[in-house]
Image (cartoon, rainbow, N blue to C red; front, side):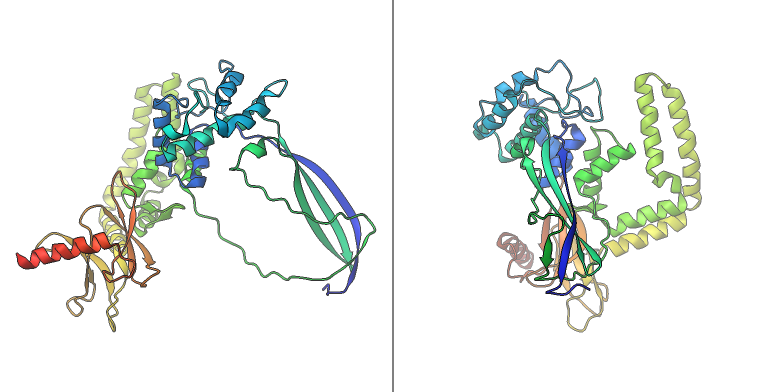
Length: 437
């Protein structure tokens, strides 16, 4: 291989200029995907967007359309937005063009236009989340009216002792819309100016040892995008489907991680009723229902077709319900394992239990009665076991999911140095009250 001090020659240099097209108008899915980049869940994005819509700042947020209709006065909207300091320069750039040419997406519909700003907002009148989403929508709208950016790419081929090495570089030469859209991340990669026939000397080298990586997990935004691609749900229901799966303990986090229970349910359905577990079945039903809306199919025909399909599946599930029940029970039991018991010398697992006397839940050891180790738990909210450990004390951590509230993680160790004092005091007070009673 090439060594430090070896000489080489540049045998070829190619330069290209490629255009990076401006972003297309937002539909519901596109907005959810983009907002996910600054931590918004699908459900949160829809809720904030609806608030902006109700207050007259943006158009209707539930739409599949990605093409502005001719009825929208695009220049007029830009002039309205130009009074907002944060967007004044971008608006000026748009209005300086001889002709406005809007970017177009692949989906065109007549029910609602793409999501765009309908009035100028004062930042102090919006919450932090509302402003974040409003700014995203405004910048997307403005940038969809700007020319493509241009990026110069350079590729040099270098011959070193008969081995060919490739050096690639690129840099933005015309920013255009990129200058006003901070959500688009691009890094220039500079290489020296090289000419064919130029001699070079190796002054340093690096040998990288890399491994292939598995596919990344779905973020909520990417999952909504995939659901749209597969025809699962509608623009109005996809975020609700995800939220329901979270609240029922099937998935958690962002990126999304399935629970043991979720994995087991999918395996069981694939084994006993594969048809019902495929996206094709749900997609087929969605297409049939769209056919009713368009007048291509009758309601009676679609209902009858669905009944026949589901009837055969239900008969199979009914015949195999004993086996299915045992498999689900096993999965749920595994899902309630919090982690290994923390009692020295004990090989048991910490599991979620319910007191026969008080009917309250707590964490106990599977080796009971040989091990009586217990931990308190909050009595409200869905309990999700994430098999993670506290970074401060190495005890297991559980997640509490309460409807309408942000999920929170709880270290089960009451003596954890980072334990929330409010919860610690609350639990101690409850213990004291029980003792006095």
